[in-house]
Length: 504
Image 1 (cartoon, rainbow, N blue to C red):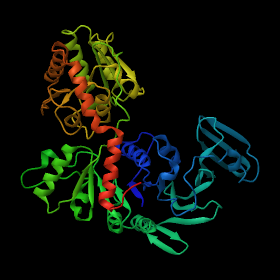
Image 2 (image 1 turned 90 degrees about the vertical axis):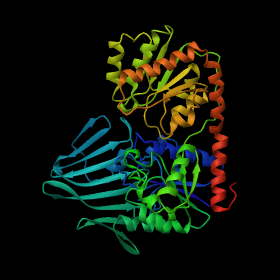
Image 3 (image 1 turned 90 degrees about the horizontal axis):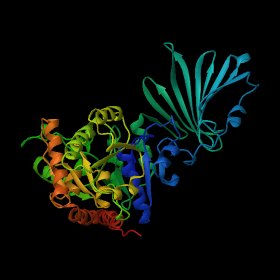
Image 4 (image 1 turned 135 degrees about the vertical axis):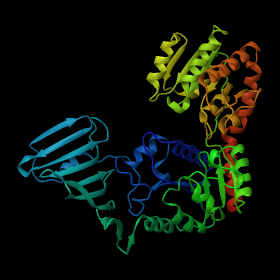
């Protein structure tokens, strides 16, 4: 049996969905459960293997829709500049280099090619563009061999894609994709397929699914129908990665589902199981299915991350506070800066370290300077946080929406006290009010002074009431539910219950 995990795309700055899949891949490996992670988007700007390896996938775990129909393997780019140039007659008259872009001119032919290297000074080429008489005519894409070619013609003074060809290892064309009247037509040796939906259907059929297989859908946008229909041959699961409904547009008679999950919920009778990351979301979703629909699907809680161990330390810096996140406006790091400055007036020994990078870094740095707090509030950038948390005492979070919150899980795994908003789902999962931290009521108006005061009061309370040690032990106790061995067991149990086949 195989677990097929279906996603759309992936990039260098991957989202929480891809990181959740990478965690899942590791856990399924640990329990020796064969799994594949399928990417459905057209991904040509980078070799897909470089993107998947970057966050921890193994090559043999990856399926890309567009090379699935070839005999090429998922592999890093090792196709050299010399191999590219060997395909052309004559000798280039001059060369230009700009970082990882290398351009070769054949001026006697009024032609040049541009090679995009894997890295600056690398001999390996990820893709090439061919320009003849000032017109882009072709692009080639390489891993250990050429796997795709795009052909262009000029239309309305623009290079217009008319065909893609995907190759086998021996250079033969496995199939082609042609553009005809605004439609994609896929030409295989034994069939024609019109439109991407039919290509996806053909892909699903090629898996030869049985009732011992699981198909887990992580993203559905524009691919749901053929997957839902063909996955009925196996067992279909859907992962909920975020808030699944609009609170402000829901009343006693009507619920507005999140657009990303509307299709899955509407067709929940075709779904064998849903997966959420927290018990609180499971509780809410179960109640909503019962109230607003005729469906009563199985819902499993499986965290999107896990803790290999629970690090402890007797070297924690006294009165030390930490937060870690993207430095983005929705994380409200500025509120935390103001809160610590106010608490410093009551607890002079306080220090606050902010880990992460992002677009708000300049504003946060300016705020720290304006508040004359640069001596005790530091921007620390990126770090291996697994080795950092245990050096601190309190973790602050001002996010008003956290589907799970990996940093929160990691913080309690190192025994930190957490102070954050009383909002679904992460804070409510990891913080037991008054036991290992405090949950601050979240108001709609979000008056900054009130919020800063509320956080400051809780910081001061922890220290004034000497609560750190008891809260530290409570955090460790809460973190035990997220140990890797327990999350692995949750996956093993799901697979056995759904397929009635015991995993290895």
